[in-house]
Image (cartoon, rainbow, N blue to C red; front, side, top):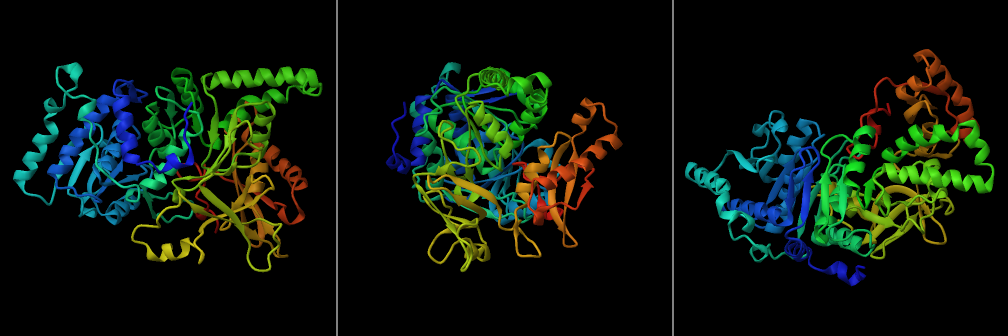
Length: 566
């Protein structure tokens, strides 16, 4: 078992990564799922050394910015680690960003080098990123173009990056060995990572994350005894997001684990095949995956007449639940110790059912500004509906406005090791990020019980104030709506002083039930009265509006609410 304490979280992050590469030299580090191309830690270290040589020749200084934008893959991971272990600052950019937004971020970040994959090279105009000196291709880790430096230097750079013979592994007849791995000396207090948020407000801000912020997440995970050297993990969440980066990249790298990168949209069919092939020993996911499995595979089974009868008899109910749990565990690869859900709120109904059948699930809470983790609890102690307890190195308080009812939800405010330094070149946002006494505003509303379990009620920006002064949390109503089998997703908004719900029907469920488009919508409309029986009088939905297309979402699958609120 890992014998980590809170004091170990202050270890030097870059030294921890270097040590892990040396000790795991011959073990697999990164595998691309589709091609099955694998880099061992030694092979990845070779590519990192080659990139370090390029950075030196390009006169990249400590603290200079390197932007990275493309589909998740093994080489994406190598570029990320190469940048922070050189002494530069990595700026990962979500490949799903609009090209114009991405260009603004690249320009705003002051990136001197830009790594792009082939597809994005046709969409990103370098004319709009004038400070970029070198454009690199992620797939080959080779130079595409060089600007702002002399032709002679360009030739030298191309020769340097192409000279692979100098960095051959010992197994190929060269002399690259663990002793050749030597990363930069960096203090944990240094900025290593700028993560531009992809939030639901439509405004991207560059979150400044230090080595200590990263260590507070990655090295904290060592304490949990969930992952060890040589363990397998499947990465299907976007690595440019802080949640996935922390626990699908940095944590495995500091432990010497093996990450297989899916590299494409995790549809139910694709993700199930991947779980079966990789058999991960820890699963990091967002609620959408489990909610789809529950709605498509579990809920219909529970509605069968025989199963309904069996689940009313205690002894037989245990047998039914054991059978469901076994099938679900098998479907997810069969070898994991825990499923950690984050990035968004898990449906209360799904969470309570999975807890009831003793499925090893837990829910954490965080945000990019904390790199991202704020709270977590082991699945054995997790309370359904909560998002765990604050980390031992984080403090959480529920803040209420003067005169507000202290028994009602208040804003979650935090301070501690994981809290960022602020936003890059954004003094206005920085001025609003912290309270006068040094706590960070999360913008989330929540409560805490007497056992320190944290419960999220919604975003303060999405809370709707009713005409009679009642606080309405649309996310709670949406959770109830989304439990209906014929509804894929929903969004509750206020229109003309009335609450309405935008509804995206579940076409697959309708086809499975043999319903026409008209019959499907009639059933959905009929569900509205049942919904209104479950909510308070001031939360009643006056109308369902058919939303033809799925909602536009952030990469972590949160709906961009601002697009639909008017």
